[in-house]
Length: 173
Image (cartoon, rainbow, N blue to C red; front, side):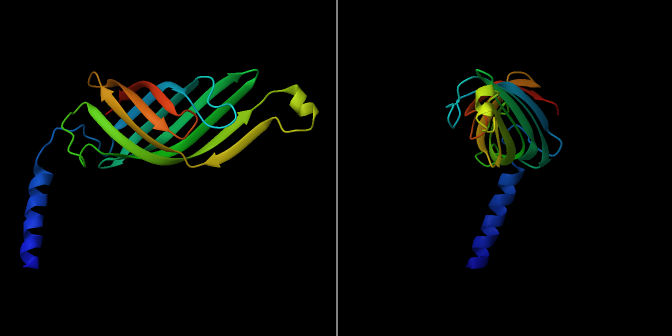
């Protein structure tokens, strides 16, 4: 009986895997460039100010991309922050059988370096460091929608420099 169940499961999986659902294809060599703004955040400044962000990712395997992201934010009064890191994402379109070939849903994790600089001479005069740096592991979940073959928009919620990132995405391949 077990052999019959395994044979049935194998047949169903082979039929499903050969059926085309029309999802956005994310495979080896598929690349995206993202450019946008970010709002919200964590910590003392509570995410005040607007972040400028950019990122690149490329497909290394079916539904898996890796790449880098960077962002810069100014909070006023000479306070700035900078974030740069590497990240990987899993694209869920095939897994959830999403039939829209213009929509891409993804989530992932990364490793980043963050630096906050106060630029305050008073703080320095007290002998206190005017900057703070750390490495951390941000997570993200997002979606992109292509309006044309190679141009679209994206939205991400993340634990990095900005809680919410919105912007343009360019599909290179």
